[in-house]
Length: 208
Image (tube, rainbow, N blue to C red; front, side):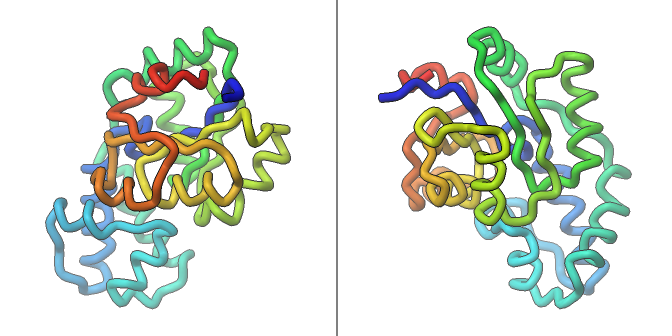
């Protein structure tokens, strides 16, 4: 098996422990559009990306731009998330191994940049932060070409089916991580190459 030299990370639920903040913000969006609050458990079971697909499921007919405006107006008022446990150690080890790392996330670009700076300070682990990516399946191949990431040497690590399907569509390795938004049974259903409990599991796969 070829060595993996390039790692694409999702952000929310993979690096950032922002599930509680995102859940509460989505409930604010629901309230804005007159939709009843749901439980966190139901949110985790039903949440889908791209997020406008999820909004339409609940009858939100507003444009993406309008929904984004409502979301953005509430999100940062709820505070800042923290990185998930073990993230610093995993990124430091990958960096020391000479791996190229990027973030590919639907999280809004300005929030992503603010949080990366808050989490890591001047430590620059990532070649680039790609935020505000609504549909990763549509964008991932262009990003791979842009960065000259070879397919056999690249893995995407994420906590949703959308991350895994994006990686499969591009022909790269996929690793589902269980620290975030979606439960194991949902992730297993899309058949990732690997399922790991947290980012430390990457070093047990034998592909780095």
